[in-house]
Image (cartoon, rainbow, N blue to C red; front, side, top):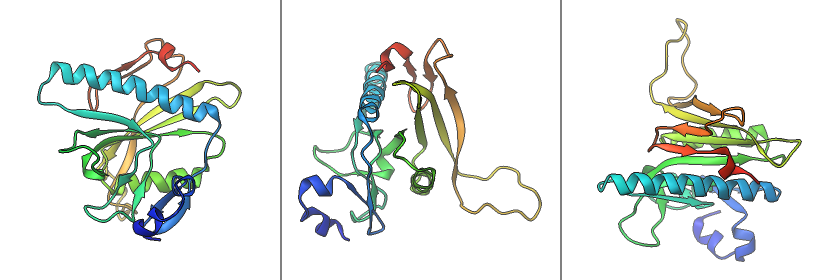
Length: 203
């Protein structure tokens, strides 16, 4: 399917589709917790982004949710829709968000997500060169976050055994991890200083 064909579908159907090099992939809508925690992460990141911008006049970030990120430099038939993301300010309103504009993408994992789907998404985000990828794992026994992981884009493979070659030229590696046992909440310096206490992430 092309972007143009996708635009012809009713909105309630089109919004449930991602295009992976023109292939239709259906998005599974998670439970209420999925949407709530996506919005709470958005809120915390937005507050931190605004704080950074207020201190650095040359910085300009936008934090949003469920916005298409187009992976190529042109065309619209290859995109993903992360649960939350941070991108550079664009030159004009209502512009498409490209991977080259995107600093961070995040996915909230709920029971409807399969590990295979998430790994495929992670590979595509990395291949598009997005510097930071976050995963938010929900507690299966309660309406709460169990763990948040931040992954950094590794653009050069680390030391491997002789004769071993990486399957992909770029990959994400875990650069930060937080659980409710971390009293200070989420603290991270990239792509701007982030400090989100756990009470901001309560359901």
